[in-house]
Image (cartoon, rainbow, N blue to C red; front, side, top):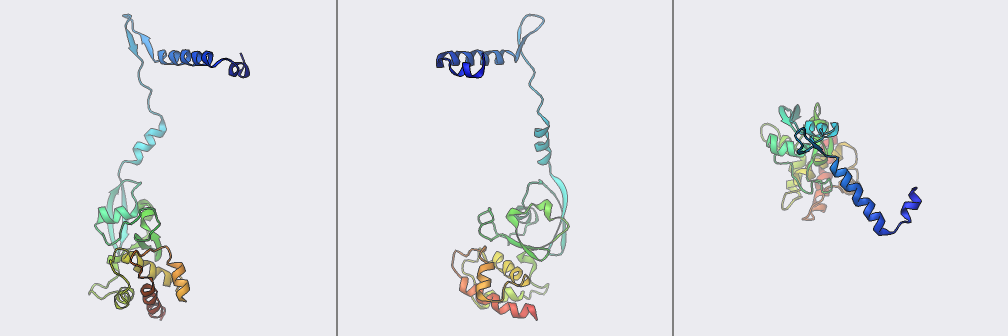
Length: 214
């Protein structure tokens, strides 16, 4: 019987054919032992794709250079750079906001450029220079000019987004996108401030741009 003829059969007959086929498939998983007992067939061996998933979850050795210091770690290859910084290295200045790359609170500098650490795998950051908010100030405690400018212009209130804002601002200046207030707003639009301190942030970036370019 071809497919067209089968589709024209009454629903009751099609249902009966389906139930019979299901029963036959289930019976295929059973067999009679030499003693005549009904024994379940051995489960199928997991395919190679499941083996790959299992291997991916095994912690791997990797090295990260953060704020000029090397860190030897054993991490799940699926761990983000954000989680590695906060949970494994203990640098909690980098904040977890949306965890979907939409708020900018987790911004860090990687090889001098802005990156969202919640969207970057730690394993992909190996061999690169990672800078977090903890690494900006000098060893004697002197603040980075951008940190100082944020204080002088009162460019933060609750402070949760501030580490990402400051690092993004430094990256914005280095990338040459801080020439005008309009350009600063556009190229820092990925960093959200729930307290709406945007005018003061723009003022701080404008002040530091001249110092960084000298």
